[in-house]
Image (tube, one colour):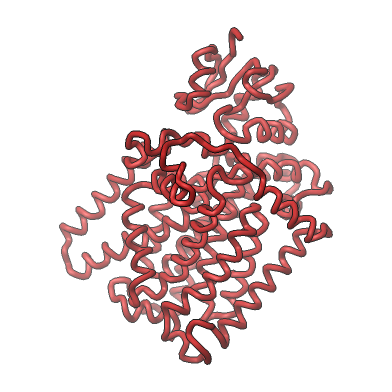
Length: 502
């Protein structure tokens, strides 16, 4: 009996009604099409670009130039798109992000369905679409998006490794390679992912060892062979992506970025704690309802034999948290830690939501079921509105716990922001309170025709400043108070200020 079968047999509320194979395949195909259509609808006005994806634009502008592995792969993908798309970098970024985001949203559905059934998969997708940061993790061109999608599919591959060694091993290897290429943090993250994918499902699913020999804490048989193949596949994908670059030099460069010193952030007493501070800062930026449901699912995956299938997503999620806590804040490469964990954590929260709803349905407690769904939907909607303006949940607003989050959120430019920049031709500071604004704007201006700004620089040397509306950070408020608002985007989320005085 595999881990998935054991979970379905031991946990009746999460059990699906048996369906024919053709119907299951039709559901999967329909879900995949629906997920890609949903992401395409969210990106109908274009994809935002984060500071961690600035190197992608350089590769799109000149695919023949020497580039890092991930931008090089993106450029190769864009070269296979229609000529009209290749000629416009904004369209190319939009197509790339539709592919990445659709794959990620379908991964959320597939992982939740394999773990706890069809209705929990629908609940997980609803959590992703209702949580602004989880939605942005799939709809913003960034390295965080690649890590988040890789985490979801790596958990899926780890879950299916015992029952489907070839399919699970291929997904595991490709996902590990994507995480390794997306960020220098991958040097910490991918080994933890691979070890967790090998050990945790075995430790919590003894029935899956029926056809394996050896000690339960030392996996053998088909799982060990598939895991070894996945590790070799990840190494092969890395060798291909390096496109002739020496692996030693690439690894040394990644380590240098990991070891690069960073300034300590004064964001409240929670962030000052060495390891627990990072975890506390993450918890203060997650909706409280999702935090409660996801925490319950994590506890269930660690301590209950009836939650065998939860071991894979829980193991991958804990490995991701361990890597983030080890790296500390701020992260290397202007990465957003919340968006890295949001889709996978949304899966765990959706599983908790779906299981409780199914339990009430099986008990025929219709009133309690409606109240549960209404209360959960209302709380998530209220917190989504709160997190969209100030990414701190109710706990984060406690005095002194987490003062602000703008310095933890890398700069990003949307198509509306870029259209606003095209109307000005003076030196401009872009989102000065957020890391990577000048570097991102410089890359965008070089790749997109029509931007007349002669240069992007620090605010004290700029004539204009692109600031969020309303400005919340001290730096943003200082320049807004000493400037004159001259133009805003149509949604009034970003405004251009002309700086006056010294």
